[in-house]
Image 1 (cartoon, rainbow, N blue to C red):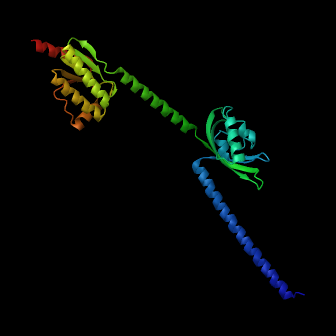
Image 2 (tube, rainbow, N blue to C red; image 1 turned 90 degrees about the horizontal axis):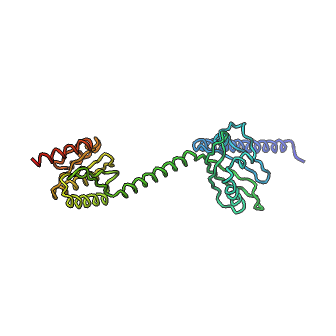
Image 3 (tube, rainbow, N blue to C red; image 1 turned 180 degrees about the vertical axis):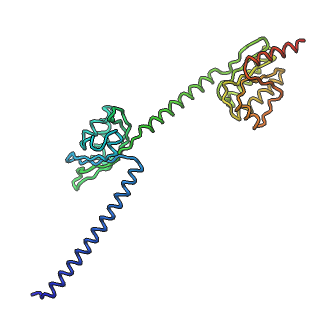
Amino acid sequence: MNTSGENAAELEALRAELAARDAELQQLRTEFEEVQTRFDLILAATNDGVWNWHPNTGEVQFSSRWKGMLGFEADELPDTTDSFFGRVHPEDLPRVELAIDAHLSRREPYEVEFRMRSKGGVWRTIVARGQGEWDEDGQAIRMAGTHTDVTERRLQERERERAAALIAEQRDTINALGVPILQVWRGILCLPVIGAVHDERANSMISTLLERVTQSETQFVILDLTAAEFHPQTAQHLSRMNRALLLVGTRIIFCGISPKMALTLTDLGVDLGDAPTFRDLDNSLRACLLYMREMDE
């Protein structure tokens, strides 16, 4: 038989073991709370909504942020599967269901983009990511993940795409115009420069101008820069054009030089020779006529 002393020793050992387990449990609880806090901070920083779904029971939970990105307060939208599937855009729903099935049945990565109807009826663009959990028999028992609202990002991307397409269309239109040389007076040609002047276009402009002025005995060429996109490269091309025309006996007159163009020309030290410059086409034409009258006298 155990003596009272042995019973007391066993009781004390049991108490010590319980105290140790209690301390261990408290440590685990503290570590869990720290992990949960870090997880909550990460979610707050990413601004993602969290969802948790049990396919075998249909039970589902949505975080307040998940509901908030659709415009709902936490108590306004029930935690049901219909709150999700019923708000996915009808055109996107089959793709979402296929992605979920592929993940749960074949364990393919789950990441899918779709539209969801908000409280106000606006379609929000959502990127969903998730990870499943399976039992020993390979049956899906849980799937959890996040929703990220990328509506504004996609709108900005589409806006940039539209802007890029418009710029490309304008560039193609400008290039299609070629070199639109206008005969504004006998012996006076005008070349409106529209858009950017890259190397290929500059060479085309110079060669076309030289051919035209020699054929028509042109005395003056008015280069209208009002609609030009001005870059340092453009300044060098203007200087080349001026020198080339002078070599065949034609004077060039610049008009429409903006303050930015003037500053660029000055900073680069571009030499336009003694080519006159005027504010607009009207004054340029008047100057040409005056020069021609003086030459005839």
